[in-house]
Each structure stands twice: as structure tokens, then as C-alpha cells.
Length: 113
Image (cartoon, rainbow, N blue to C red):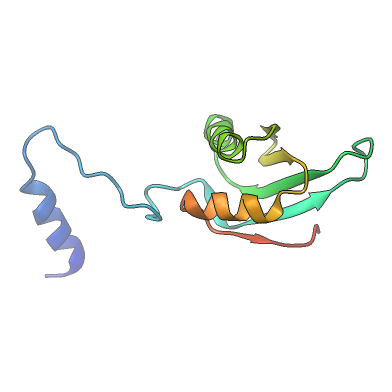
């Protein structure tokens, strides 16, 4: 009996109407990133303003806006989400990395392509 069979048997033993919640960091909990998210810093073309960009998402716009909202609340900053990227105002690369990892997403600070 492999682990999937054991998990299925355990799921069948739950009381009716209760579904198990996915563990943090589980692939079922975060199907929105393809691999590792890239965190970069930009200030060109923004009127001298600084911005932290998170790219590499492969999810629908609703899920992207939800992640952006959680990130902005956690960091108490402004930003936006569109086109598969999240923009956070200011140079917050380390803070964004910590927050994304706390959400169970894989991310790294990198250079723009």
C-alpha cells in the first residue's frame, strides 16, 4: 500500500461533510506559481519612483489580485496586480521575499531579464 492509498483510506474515515485542509506549502494550496517567483527592483520609467516587481505567476487575474491584496496588507504598502505581475511600491525586495515565503510560495530575489 503506497502513501496515496493510505491517504485515501484516511480521507474515507473522516466524518461526513468535513474536508481536510491542505497543509501550508502543499502544492494543492498554491497552484498559482510555476516554479520560483522572481522579485526585481525597478525605478526607470516611473517618474523616479521605486517599485518592487514580482513576476512568474501562472494563475488567473482573480487569484493574482488576491495574492497582491494579502501582500499589500502584510507589508502595509500600495501596489497593483496585472499582466501576471505584482507591483509593490518602494524597494521592498527582502520584505516581499519573506511575505511570499510565509504564504507558502517559492521566490527569489533576482536581476531583471
